[in-house]
Length: 311
Image (cartoon, rainbow, N blue to C red; front, side, top):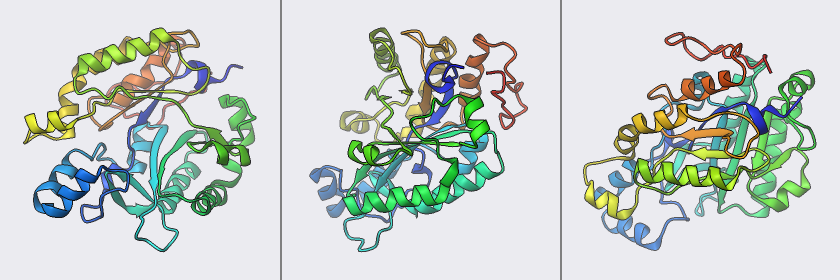
């Protein structure tokens, strides 16, 4: 049985999963430029609302995203430089109001009520994490998910994962830590176009397809990215309006994709504001191109009971 995640099944993902709970009162991330930090310090009343408008990529909670059908979660993890504790947060320009450990428990709670579902947790960024904090994070992951963690020496077919009770694949963007722990998988490549227009983003994705897909998990990001020039030209805009304007064209591109192990096939597709425009449904229904008997829900029925048992 072929590894369905690597070669066949399309899986929907959310880009910057945790930005629905960014803290408008938190410090700017240590990864941001000195200019952004300076402007935020000098003109917080002006700069902070702009930061928030262009940092939020999701509005659904992590549980709501899972209920909607998302199976790839993009976790950007960081530690606040001014925080003496071991608390870890999610980050996208600013930090979240919730800590990482609480969200991992929330994911576990959802998995326990959905025993045949499998999720990929992509742990990335690691701004401010020391070796000690990496150790703390990995210990939390192991303690929370325990036997639900799929080791990387297992070929992750759904049949194998169901038989062994595996429900979680953790990719970890720190090679040295991956080598130490069999429960961690190498970082999953993310095709990030860094484009402000839909046309340019689609061109980038098509170019990446022509170059050939990785042999294992990878993500095609259909998220647009603002830059300073774009923000100045659109002073009353936001990432949400930018995204919603792009969805009709991106929807057409998504529906043209085909699952499979061939060079130009896509694996995971991740986007912003995944609750809009039937994104999750469109991605999942691509799987019917290789198996028409796949149990995808009809329109309006909701994607909660999607079954991949046909594979």
